[in-house]
Amino acid sequence: MAHTVSPLARPFPAMPPIGGVTLRVARAGYKDWGRCDLTYVELAEGTAVAGVFTRNVCCSSEVELGRANVAQGRARALVVNAGNSNAFTGYRGREAVEQIMGQVATHLGCGSKQVFVSSTGVIGVPLPKDKARAGIEAALQAEPCTWEDAANTIGTTDTFAKGAMAKAMVGGKTVTLTAIIKGSGMIAPDMATMLGYIFTDCAVAPAYLQRLLSEANQRTFSCITVDSDTSTSDTVLAFATGAAGNAELTGDDSPGADAFAAALEDVCRQLAHLVVRDGEGAQKFIAVTVSGAVSDESARRVGLAIANSPLVKTAIAGEDANWGRVVMAVGKAGEPADRDRLSIGFGGTWAARDGQPLTDYDEAPVTAHLKGQDICIEIDLGLGDGRATVWTCDLTHGYISINADYRS
Image 1: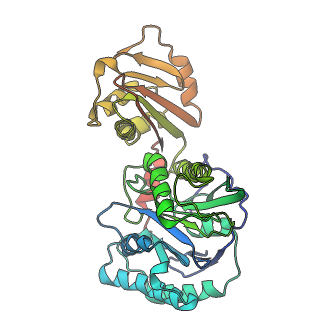
Image 2: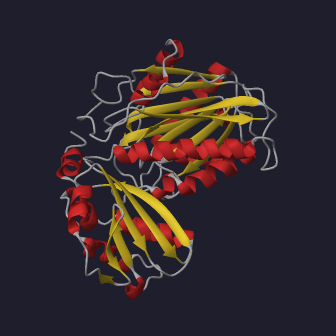
Image 3: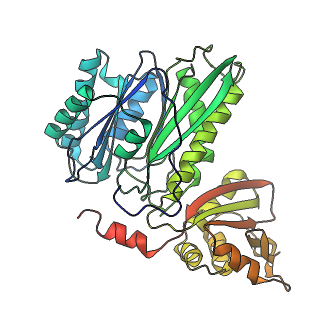
């Protein structure tokens, strides 16, 4: 991909095909790069769809149309364009999306509302209709490809392909979930994150799939941040083809529903962590665990205030156990907190308890912990039972370098 592979990268997993899902990629030439940049996924008739989308009010036409169309619950195709986000492009951007939807719908003989489109890349440049049309034609004639091919094709500043999978036993049938995601910067989702796609052969009713995805999102994608910036294009879609042959899951009482829900959340968490591990310029993966909050949501907000703090993130980059910056971030979060009950630790070693530094605090184990790649920050607010974990990365000069020349 575009940059040196992140030191926090994970190898792409072995991922089996999913019944009712066919992947193809092509080169539309949205940017001057020698790689495929258009992904086309064909889905079996009757495939259920669910989605969560950015709350950025300057969102793309792809997000607006996707948000509207996901309500009808069925999908036949997905198209992902890389290199051009098609956001802030007015009627010309919307026409380009509608053209893609219509072109694919005509090919498949389905309604255009069953064709979902995502675009990622530079904001403010209309998606070229001629390149989009030719790219779709090339994709329709291309040979099927692998999950890793598709994961590479949807990327922009990503440094490695990201994929995840899980299995579950549902009504006596083994169902499989596979997923790919792209994301490296402009990461601070509210309802979703970057561009992520989950595919399963499980039979799931659209409304129930939507509920499960929304719930999983709150504990995974909405608990990560790289730079506090929410993209105009953030989208996560889940597709369920039903090819496994299980009785359709319609609610929590359906046989195997709990197992499927757990597998879906597992896949979402895997993907969310991979995005943080590829944070632009990242050298360290940071888990911030907040306990003792008045509620789980309050704990999440406190955790995000810490994870989004440039001072905290640069301290971790410099391997500096500056817990005073954590105190600052807790205090600015706008959530209930009591200075005299606050406790802070790193990697299992408490630096401060009940609002003051420990007299026997030994910084040596903390310093050793901060030299590693996986960092843990623990906060106990001492107010209640609320808890949450959020994930972020450190802030290095690499982030500046990547974003300073992003358009060049």
